[in-house]
Structure formats: structure tokens, C-alpha cells
Image (cartoon, rainbow, N blue to C red; front, side):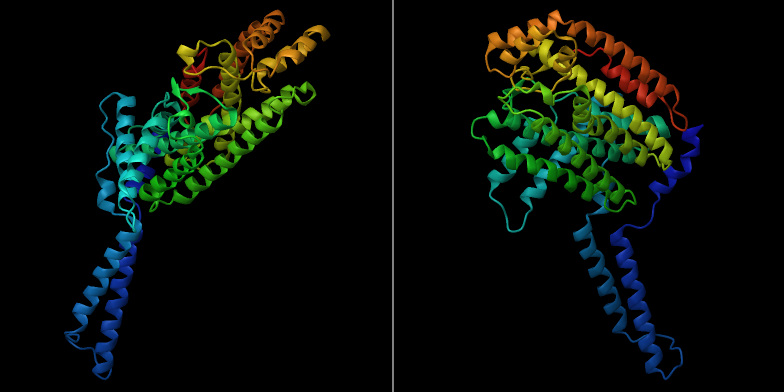
Length: 432
């Protein structure tokens, strides 16, 4: 049983090596003790004294105490971390949101405690920024970290589960940062049923800097809650790698076509897949699963490779669904107004249509695609309809789901339910 094999790992993590603050203090204590003993021996002409010089004891204690307090100041208080516990109320979403409240409070307090002191409106803006952008989605990425870790390890301590949730929220913060930037670049109007952040009164292009703040919050959380963990560097590297991959995918998306110039020669299904794997699959599916695997103590590179293979295909499927919903979804349900046609996007729909369109239909698409006009958009959708794009999507969905189930059945070394639950969550979804 895999969770049983990992039980020793759990105890080792909960009783892991001394924190950096404790290690620093112990080292100073040893140094001070050795110095005191050496001075005593030297003063007695080489004979071991029964007592060291009276001044040496308080000096050693002072050094130890000062070192411990200084390192706690720099490295974060371990007593603060021990108070963070998963509520385990039975409602995973509510418990996950409770961790958000903890992190939100910490990040706002961090602003308030800056030296030199910042004016109060800075903390107020940071709280508003976080509350508006971070917790409004379905939270699937973050909750996946908690559920996947527990699926691998079995029941974990409330402290460990809280830390898994904190790591999940780092992914939600990363998502918020990406969306704030993406909405500016796409000139979008709404997101998650509300105005895009840059469209909010008084925000405008300040949203660019706000996106940077959101990204930096990730590393504040990681530093505060993972700095003393051996996984700190691997987790940091994972977030940096996935952020780079996603930014690369965004670059491909933005440069495949100019906003107002239609050139279908630059579109292809291969180009499309390249965009979505980098822009969506890595951070939406692989990042949560990889985080859970790291927390669960998995080190088998073959398992990580299998997870990546499944997540890349699932992420591609997820983005194809997004493209379909952008065109055919109800804005009241999906939470935004679709813009892919008017934004000249290299979407799955346009590539599928171009593969079967007649010369006359391609000419109609060229004349109306990427036009900021409702009548032109309707003409593009009419060509999609004539070319059977809806039917092609439903066929793709069923075939891809079957392929994913086959890959999931091949997973050996951790519970395949981690992936099957993800697939169940997105299969035939109606909301972005």
C-alpha cells in the first residue's frame, strides 16, 4: 500500500531537522561553550578547572540568546507556523478558503510592518487587489494540491495539510497574476463575472504593477512557510520553471497573429498545440500535481514523467474546451464575454474549420475574422457551423477523454485516482 510506504516519510517531515534559527543558536552555544572551556583551561595552566570564569557564563548565554532572536527575526518564527492548521470541517472548499484568509492576513500585515513604514493606503490597496483577483475562480488548481497529496499519503496532520493548501494558494496567486496581465494584453472586458482588474475605476495600467505584486506574494508565502523545509528549493525552482513556460506560451499566443491582420498561413494545429501546452497545461495541471507529489515524498523521475504526459494532454483538452466555450458558452455561465474571434486568436475552432473549409468559406473567414464588429463575428460563426466545428469538438472531447483514461490506467506507484478525479472535474464542463 503506497500510503503505508510513505508513513515514515510523514513522521520524518513532521520531526524534521532543526530549523535554521535553532541550528544557528545551537552552533553559537557550542562555539561559546568551547571558547569558555578553552579560556578556563588556558588560565589554569593546562589543568581542567572545576568552574569556568564567572564572566564567561553570562557572555555565552547572551551570545546564544541574541543569535537565536536574530535568526528568528530573519527566518520567521516557528511558533507562528505551528498555529496554522487545516480545519478539517468536511467542506474542502471552505477549509481551503480559510487558509486563504490566513495568507491574506499575513501578506497585508507584512506590508503594514515594512521599515520605513508605508502609508496606510498601500496595505488597503494590496488587500483590495488580493480580494478582487485571487479567490474568485473555481479554485480547482489549488484544491488539487490538497486532494492529490492526501490521495498519495493518506490522512495527514492538520499542519501538513495546511501547508499543502498554502502551496495550492500559491498556484491560485500565480493564476491571478497571469489573468491580470492576460486581460490587459487581450483588451478583455470581464473576467469571472466582474470587470477585469485594469477596467476598474482608478486602476488602469497600474494593473501591470499589481500583477507583479501578486507574483511576489507567492514567494513571500513560500519563504514564510517553506524556508526551513528541504523542499524549499525544489518548489521554488518548480514555480520559476512553470512561470517561464507559461510566459513563453503567452508569447507564442501573442505573436502567432497580429491583432488586426488576418494571415491564416501562420495558423496550424501544431502551432496551436504548442501554444496551449506552454500557456495552459503546465501551470493548470502539471504544477498542482507536481507540488502534491513533492509534498508526498515522491522522487521517482518516471512517475513525474508519466504525470507530465497525462497533464499535458489534459491541459490541451482543457484549453480546447475553453476555446469552444469562448465561442459558444453563455457569458452569464462562463463569467466573461468571448473575444477569440475578434482578437484574431489561433484557436482550436479556427484551425479545425480551416482544415475542411472550401476556398469560398476561407475567403469569408478572411474577410470577417479579427473584426471588432458583431455582424462579422456572426458570419465567422456561420462558417464554423457549416464546417461542422461543433460536431468536431464533441468527437474530439470523447476521443481525448478515452485516451486519458487509458493513460491513467497505466499509472503505477501512486493512486491513479489523482488523475481520474481531475478528468471527472473537467469532462463536458460548461464553465471556463
